[in-house]
Length: 134
Ligand code: SF4
Image 1 (cartoon, rainbow, N blue to C red):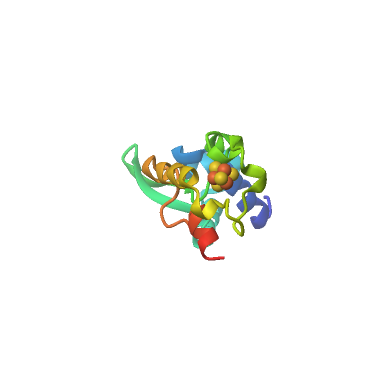
Image 2 (cartoon, helix red, strand yellow):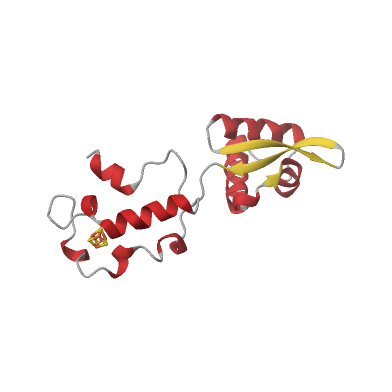
């Protein structure tokens, strides 16, 4: 039997790889060759640590849990259309100078569109807000 920390790490990685689709708890334990008892303990632990979310789901007339990652790793696609990447002022842009992300309309518009498309997590600090607080 793998050590619990190893199992937690493998379970978390597997859940993250399922992305927004999530994975049924039973499928995960089958994949990791863990017992359902050990698996449930690990899932609860990961949820307590705020790393995953468990949602009840009815499967074949029985209640089980689907596990979702709380955070997904950023992908390069998520910033592919960020205006900064092709901006002619990029080299001179700095929060402490006149050309600043704090006052950039193009960046603000891009960030707001992320929110509208549901790509940015609610409650997460935006780049502009983060810069404002510094
Ligand atoms: S924040 Fe605005 S000015 Fe600065 S690099 Fe990005 S697009 Fe250009």
